[in-house]
Length: 166
Image 1 (cartoon, rainbow, N blue to C red):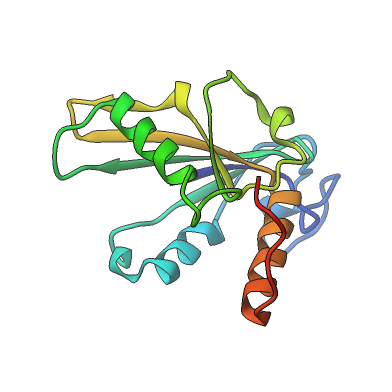
Image 2 (cartoon, helix red, strand yellow; image 1 turned 180 degrees about the vertical axis):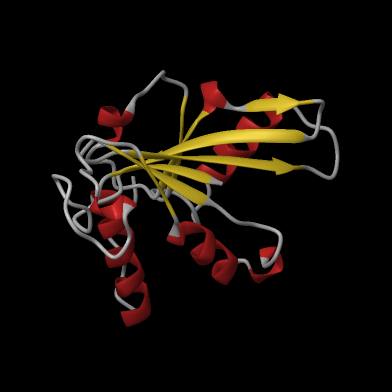
């Protein structure tokens, strides 16, 4: 997995000193290769992927709006249409309504700003090579979307009814 991530408050706006040389470079003026916590979080949520899943991040000079590029091999042949239909079906379930979305529009990073869902699959970017190598790209607002999901999780842990999901 590769996340193409807006720069964060841990980065400098201009070149400066840092323990990590790359993070000391101007976040608003450079693309920065970095590690990603998303891969570790995924393996904690899905322990069966431990040792079989990893990722990196590219921090880019935009203030908000990110995309994850996920590549995987399926056990059986599939198509982009089938993959997108699976995401559409899951996004409509009670479990994922308001958390997962699918967009058929040709969106860009600024279009995702303010979207409270954790992830919005870009259906037009789904690719399948040789039947089993699948690439999906999924957008997220790395600030508002993340914050909304943390509030949703806190309400769940506290046993408070979550706000209506749209």
